[in-house]
Length: 490
Image 1 (cartoon, helix red, strand yellow):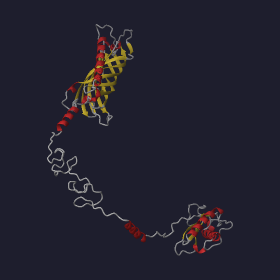
Image 2 (spheres, rainbow, N blue to C red):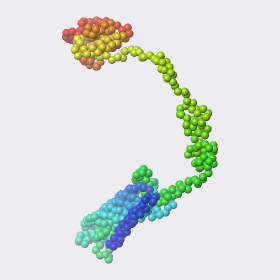
Image 3 (cartoon, rainbow, N blue to C red):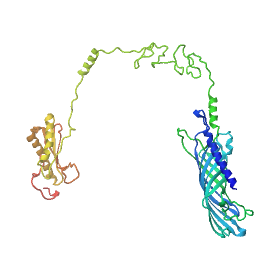
Image 4 (cartoon, one colour):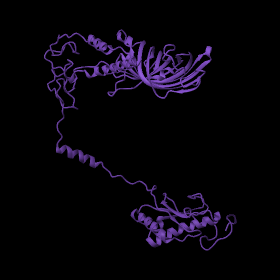
């Protein structure tokens, strides 16, 4: 038995190396061309009903696992996977039974035997034979089974043991991305643990079977994975589904579809009729690589008729293809054009200044005294007035909402008046260029009862015909201290 297992292992390794050697045998210098395209991987999920054949009667259990498969060429592929299985065995006549749990991993060489036929681009049905080596670890709980160590009930733990697998299966190609398979795997544990799957140890090789086998009939669901190769081309399905001569066949079909070479050149323009797009070109006319008569300057006069085949672009041509270029312009013409333009040229006139932005000055609570910090703003306004003698500026006073409406109206009037008097007294601005306006508390800049942003005087370009606004009725405001509430009218 050991010699047989060793022989199978040697055959497996030899087959793998022989496949690798095929690629290494390609001639140097790139003379050899491979017709096998880059192909996809296969990821599979399998599930089935394992059972053990041995000294007891095996019962169907359950098992499942995963595998990854990659083609070596169109016939051979390598598959690596794992299996978990759970089975029972019984001998009802002698009241013996066992339950086994199995975990294994293996690498298998798969041979797609019917892909030797080259009659279809892709196989719809694949016939596979496979063999492989791996490792397993199993645990067997036994009841009523006599062991060499003298026990009849207990647990056997195998540790890690070598594994040999063989099997066969059928695959059905559902789509380029998916196929299903039905397979039967027979697994044999190498070494002394090979007789312990069902818990019944071989005590006399002449009476009972020496080795137990795990049988695993199962269904596989397989998915092809992989996008493009390193050159960006789409990868083929795994090679064991494709015809080994498909690319050769495509190349032959492409060669057969090529037209038969015919050197006929009807119009003797140097372009054979097979590729000539103008087979009756005028004699002596120059043509392009398609056999079409040339029009080098694209002026719609063909070169063989064109007296100026390279006319300057942008100019009309006559019937002979000669460009009608106007006479060059002289210095006298330039001066005349410039003088005419200058005679009608007028500088733009500034129509209005209503959109000018002028600074705003602010006041303390219940005051129209101008603080020192506001002098710079009033200086800027004065400079605008001095540099623009035709404009008039309206000054509008505002207040916050601390006082009553009547009191605030008078206070806003006083604030506008104070700003005007400062511009007149300190900067010498004529009084008739300033218009007094007031707005009280009605035009708050921020929604707050008391805010320095609302206690202000604003400056804008006055409208045509705008005059001073009269002082509102009410007692003097802005000096001293006021008391009471807003409704009191102080």
